[in-house]
Length: 122
Image (cartoon, rainbow, N blue to C red; front, side, top):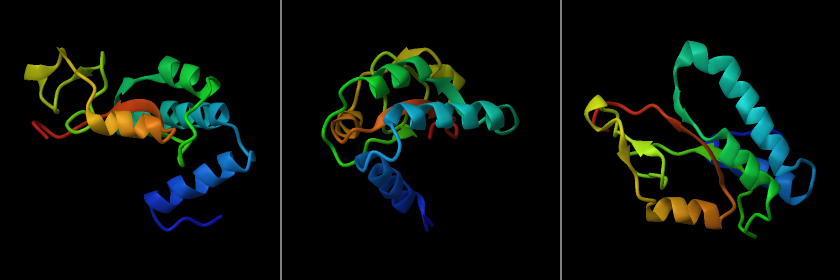
């Protein structure tokens, strides 16, 4: 499969899951493997939600269009219980309340895997 952009990548991966060519738990493990391999050099992931993602992938996922994993930046997609900072140290330990977009992601079957770094005050 050739993917032109991230939207087509998500749609393509979701199709592989829908047709049972790959399991959501396998996607999570592959994403974790790639993050762990590349993050030391890139410093792109600041908060790892691996245990939560593994548990979610093994549960009955909602019958949404996307049973894929992704990250969610904290300025627009805060996750309840995960500290949010909007990229600034000043807010480093502020607990987040789950926002509407995260509820929509989860209803669509998206498995949240990590929180990437954000620019200062986003």
